[in-house]
Length: 355
Image (cartoon, rainbow, N blue to C red; front, side, top):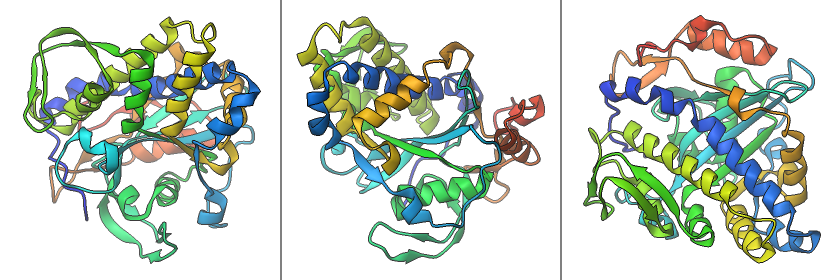
């Protein structure tokens, strides 16, 4: 296994649970705002922006051995926030690891009618069974038990992550969206910087980030360091870093919404160009026009009513620094998603967080 992430501290999990529940809403809303803003720049820009978007052909990669769609009209999207350590992403810090990892994972379920949504967050250090997959180079990767969830992306790529999620949940994934954190560097600079309210001073020798407490306006380079830092805050756990990522995405969304994007086509294009260069989708969404149509179809979803639930997990009996899906809560949750039914309160309780 290539994953070398630091153990997640027990005492920080409960404190960050509330902020985790906002993550799905923030990621999805940011995508929608950026895509709709991009749509206002004119059709003549589409060919250039379309070329920025990378595509994954899920049907070709996964074949026919997939869950059946239980409820017609419902849509399920796997949203990943990737944490690449290659190229420009070295500015993210975090050691000498290479390649990319799925730092954040959400299954977003949108019932027929698209007036509400539920997002299930899968902790990155959850131990899962990885199914047999085809890697990016076409080579077969045998199945393996007890692998960290975020290592699946590193080992075999996004299609294998989709297959792993489908196997563990029984939910048929309709669409895939991946956001590269480092891709936000140019986006932040195009916007003119993002202001975040630093709760406590940050001094991280690993990334070189030094911030005093209080409101701080970050440029693209510092924004990368901010979303990656963990050594300079709290107990140094990954959950502290997740909290910063959530805070940054909230601030980014606020900054985008406050700017008159449609009134400035040139600036809108720069922002849309940066956003699409950080985006990978399934082949059915891999064009700006399709993404804009999809975003518009979701305008009926009230962000205030979107519910984000962390997959119920318990500490692993062998390695207490890792977690496993807690049963029967996890299956109750996935069953409700598959059947488009009300999620029982028991399925929202996670032994690892005390919630």
